[in-house]
Image (cartoon, rainbow, N blue to C red; front, side, top):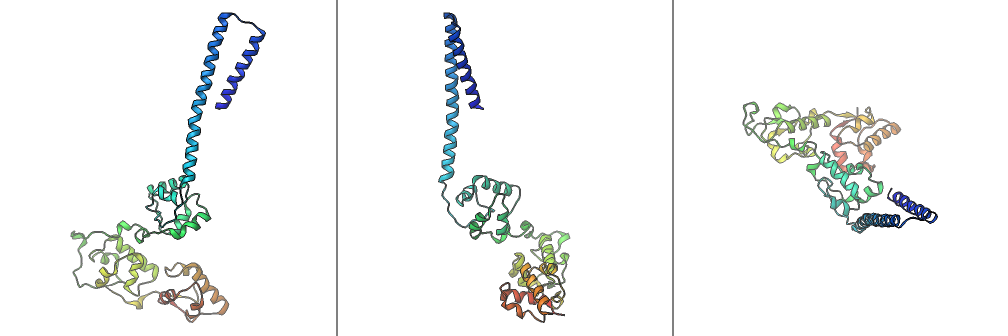
Length: 290
């Protein structure tokens, strides 16, 4: 736009000069023309002055963009500031998007969530993935509901020390009567128990970030009521819904069953890279081969 204005003004001056050569003018008109010429020159100079700072600012900005050193270091995407993201090699606009996502209540609960940042390429995520550190407290949904202070209200009377509840049978009302457990923790325990099919040891409460040392004295466990999955009938989709079985493990189990017939144990899967010894030990409490 600015260049077009300059061209129009320059062309006008040229046409006027050509007209003057064909049509002589009086001294008075010459004075008027001189003033006009001076105003024209001052106008062109002012345009050039306005354009130069903009060019300098752009050059300075580009220089700053190019001179930011990349320093790969461990970071928590839920707390890192824009400077940290810039030093990790991310452009300013992407750092701004991440901070905006967090201010709106967004949270990265696992490293894979960072891959979903708008504009993030496979190459960028591949480089940064090993440096992402998300602490346990950031992985739990509604963490603030997990630690409800004990109250002395009549509606929420607590059990006395020495009271023992069966962890596989207690409902949320009973669980809330244990000191230190409120509505949030009670719902979390019952919900996770349903997904598992029951608990076989109290240490499993660590899966949902609960302190088992504080809760150990309040619970007993009857593992005989744990709900078991028949591996010779269940589908991949239903099998993968169990907290201890991922998609690849579920697929391996079903494919083995299709190729070699009914299963009688988990022993064949000890040779599969999809399963660790710990995986098989945990899964063993929740499967049967009827």
